[in-house]
Length: 184
Image 1 (cartoon, helix red, strand yellow):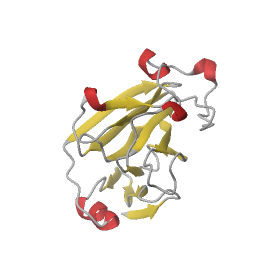
Image 2: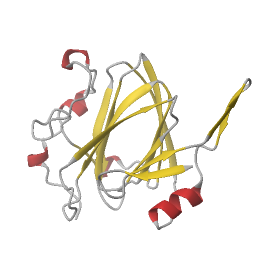
Image 3: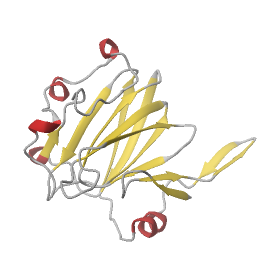
């Protein structure tokens, strides 16, 4: 498995070696040792999540506060999404910066997102199945969100606004300048 550091430190793109033949394919989707070596530390994932969504569904931008802040390893197993993260770590040189990357079932790539980032995605294909591992359980009392349409972030979600489908909760999150709960 190839690991690549992206422009925001601590964010990794993992590309598996896919073995294809007339029967289909085989790949190693995750290996703890590879991630640990790339990060220089050991994580222990405790929860796997999966969602199925249709074109235009936007989920995010979500994050959890300590002590339930989550490192995530995300992957698309069917379809294609635009995955977006925003650095909420006040001590980071990339504080307030966003990064987006297309993930799809064909590339089979995974994205490692460190704790301290807001995270969301929008579905670009007709349907998508999105899966992710976390190293902290879902804790609704510690969950927060960031406005997907914050003009300061100026995120191009690649889906026309009138075709976006969001939960009522995701429509009400504050803009970046209004966030009170950030990471050190």
